[in-house]
Image 1: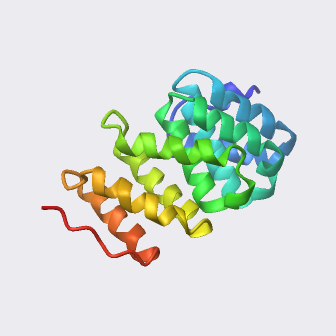
Image 2: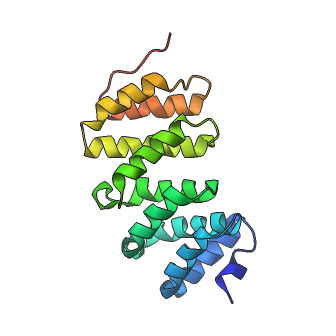
Amino acid sequence: MSLESLLYDSSRKAVENAAMALEDNPELFGDMLGLCSRPYPLAMRAARVIQLFCDKYTDALFSYLDFLTDELLRTRVDGVKRSFLKIMIDKIDINKIHNSGLVFNQCLDWLFSDKETIAVRAYSIDLLEKFAKNEPDLRNELIIVFENVPLEDYPSLEKRRSRCFKSLNIKDITYK
């Protein structure tokens, strides 16, 4: 059975089955990660499997961190962005992220882009927060960014921003 055939649809069951197949054959992890470079919907499905697998087996990812970072910066598939951002937020030490400056800037670009989905923008806020916790000097940059990104039309992003500020001990911005 090929990895592609395991990703027959986007259902939770299909993703869980593919993740279990990876558990039984961890040597296929790199191949599954490689599917994240393919077109939608295969890339999105593979990225979701990688995310689910990494929830249990984070160590499997460490030798592939450069690929994950490069693919995050390159992909146009929303589901890949979401899954890879979530992995970086929840599982990866910020100091181990390859091209971390480029990732930080990409998160800023996604935050400013009305073309990005709310989920990608929200996860970008979360990863920016993680960067700022690791590098306190970035707090001031985030303040300036959030002063220039009106989020009041997006309650979930506004709430994320407020939570980020609270976490970083920054006085919240009041828009006029």
